[in-house]
Length: 268
Ligand SMILES: [Zn+2]
Ligand SMILES: [Zn+2]
Image (cartoon, rainbow, N blue to C red; front, side, top):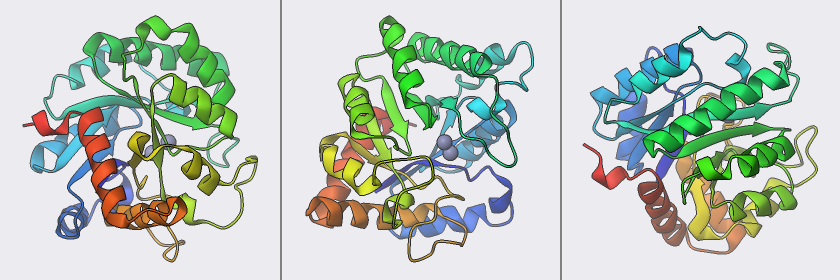
């Protein structure tokens, strides 16, 4: 399995990231992609990736941080991509969810920061890793409008949510779809209208990539504790169950998908 999206650069892994990474690879997680959400956490993701053969990094600015950027942030970001262990740009996108800790950032700022990253990814021929929360319609509009700045395989939507119509649009644009431990949760998240397993059912296996979003979105039966990359196996098992497939098949195909999308075989 591959965990294509986690945050080992976040505070909760400060003391034991080494153990966590080794434990994941011992349990069959072949590659881990660690993701930045602003310039400093992207920098940390790069530093961590340099230390481990099976660890890679994606650098970018999350829509939450679109209003806290230095003037030259896009140049700083481009500088970070010079490291050979960088495999993508993200997580970037749009987020209209009202968090307790973070109110909705001015949508026009979010949009500007997202578009700059779409253009950078195209220039560098790197796949995008897109974050969407309650903003699927706007994201599709932006991507469609900037279609000439999308690669043939433009990247992936991480932690897919939304309805079947959005999923169709995302697949048509050529993106892969990332699923996390929240596909094991009962019920539908606030503000959503579609049960996540229904999105899993609709997505062809050859377009699915697996992720954990550690330390968040811990799958059942461990919900409530810190999430770790080794739990991507539970995500794989859950996809297998939903799709009536074997775990071996899900493991093989989603690993190939991740290896192809992020060109992990060619990595140093
Ligand atoms: Zn995200
Ligand atoms: Zn994330």
